[in-house]
Image (cartoon, rainbow, N blue to C red):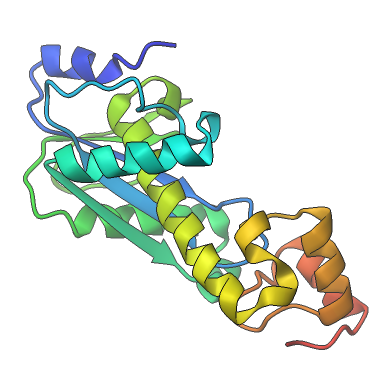
Amino acid sequence: MSLDLDQRYYNEGYEVIVGTDEAGRGCLLGPVFAAAVILPRDFTSPLINDSKKLSQKKRQQAFEMIAKHALAYTVASVEATEIDKINILNASRLAMQKAIAQLNHEYDLILTDALEISSDTVPVVAVIHGDTLSQSIAAASIVAKVSRDRYCEKLAIKYPLYHIDKNKGYATKQHLDALKRYGPIKHLHRFSYGPVKACLYKKVPLL
């Protein structure tokens, strides 16, 4: 699909577009991350695509390009303990809103990847499959994903038994085996998620 949705909104008269997306919604562990990105109106790059379709190397390259050329970009997160309190959808919305609130640049339109969020100042459009249609949303998906991956790589140094650098908190066999053997990590695992909750029923001790 062509990432030309932004241009359509520019043609309608909008001048500065924010794209926002999240990363880590399906993970068993760690915060959900969100990014907000404002790209120059004339910016194009074949590297900018849905983060899930890019290799890790290509994502890193795209992240560096976005960091260099974006008019503004921010990253925010919501911790696992908060996810357990308000659920992952609300936590994802909150992370997006936090990222947008941190922007130090004016804008007149927000595009999100499917999730509805509120704004008192500008229109918000929730775009289904937005990371395949909007360059701004695709850029935000890359920034959020790379930022979360880097967080997981640092976390793996502290908790090597869970191989978080490889699974990034997702429910891989390796991660599930570690959960069953060592138990969940307090304040990091999402206890509202089924596989983590199952460990509590089996009385696997907390790390």
